[in-house]
Image (cartoon, rainbow, N blue to C red; front, side, top):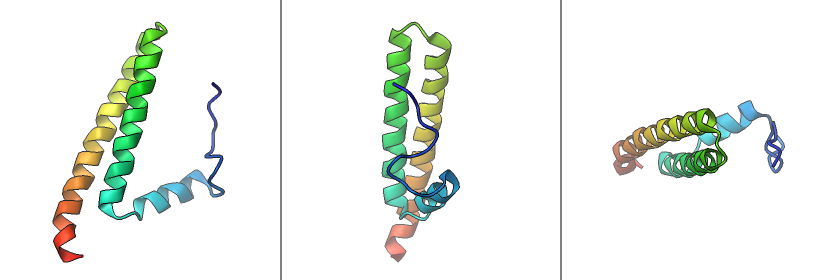
Length: 84
């Protein structure tokens, strides 16, 4: 599967996409980050099964870090939610 350098169904730039994602309500952003972490973990497992150990390890580490980011954003949501 070839990997793209843009999001096919998004007409803007990656910088614009980052801004739009950053403007999501924090609970929605946390959900997005959880989904991204799950995708990275699945890719890690697939690459590990193909014998690509270094790539699998890097993707697993990225998944762990994105999961951590999701947890921090979820905490931000819990702080903000009562005021919304």
